[in-house]
Length: 245
Image (cartoon, rainbow, N blue to C red):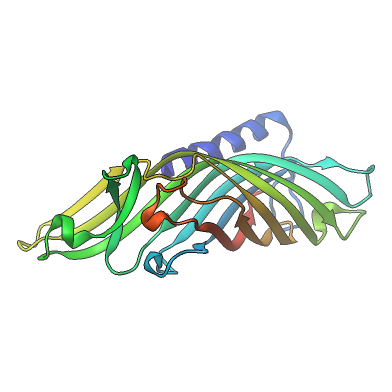
């Protein structure tokens, strides 16, 4: 996933470099390229979840890389733009109690249950890392209002809209030391019952180079009756973003 994200960013930078002349702007010395390449950093949590599906806050992180292109609404200088885009989103879930997702054979091959790692790999292990990663191709859609209508590049702005995401893959990653002190890393790529499509409300507030953002999922994270405890939890993400141009 990291390689795919880097290739996505490098491809956009290369495309824009050859498409038009790069000029320097007064805002942090960023190149003046049409549109925005956002790098979002934040946290991921589940809403409307059962008590048994608690996650650890700091390890449950979110990273997104989005390119969005502006289109003027209501004429130039109105302050409003429509900003569709495309990008890659990855969310991590770190469950409490030394637990992670495993397939649930009693339900089906594309389902999951939450189980203690020691139940599967033995009681005499020391768990060092335990996360679930879910990766998407996202299509963000925003309507922005720029408070400085004569110069959008220097303006504070607020954006509301939504995004649709298509599941690429999901996997668990567990690392632990066994009784002999041998470190083992296990990465298991499965569907785990995650919904193939996600959609929700998205918002940003800030300046050209820096924003705070939030996302509220309108659909369930897992397919019906395919997630642990039959959960109907949805997703909440929030954090900060930096614009490379």
